[in-house]
Image (tube, rainbow, N blue to C red; front, side, top):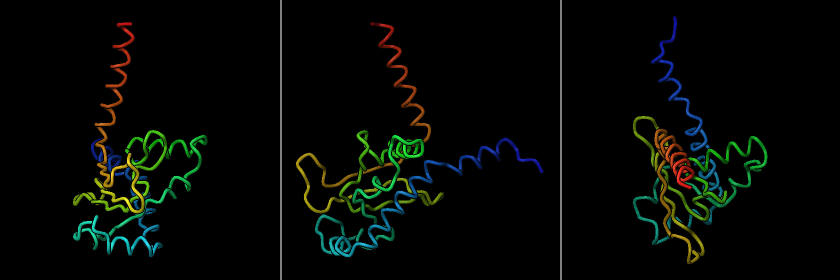
Length: 162
């Protein structure tokens, strides 16, 4: 039985490398949280965290360990993984983790089961330049393409006038 072009496209949309990396990051954060009694106490007692999130089923901890586990950006594998995380916004342009120093609460899409948004609450010392609450939304695939095209268009436009 032949796979139709439409079925093939649907299957490819379901196998999204970006979604796999996002899921792996939040699973890593979840493991870090489950193995840290001190942060679990923080979540149960902190006034900064809303009561409805305390019983969240998939709480995570971003303690910079993910960035240390991924191979260096100088390697092909590490560069690819870190590039995916930067494209989706989980890593900031400097290479650090967006949720660094946060307890993380992801939200899932009801239809796909994929993580689509997350909020992080900082624990410990919050520096003046840091936001105490960090928000993330997974970019839509079309949004990434349009952002790239707009950047190229702006660069070409700027070169044409200079």
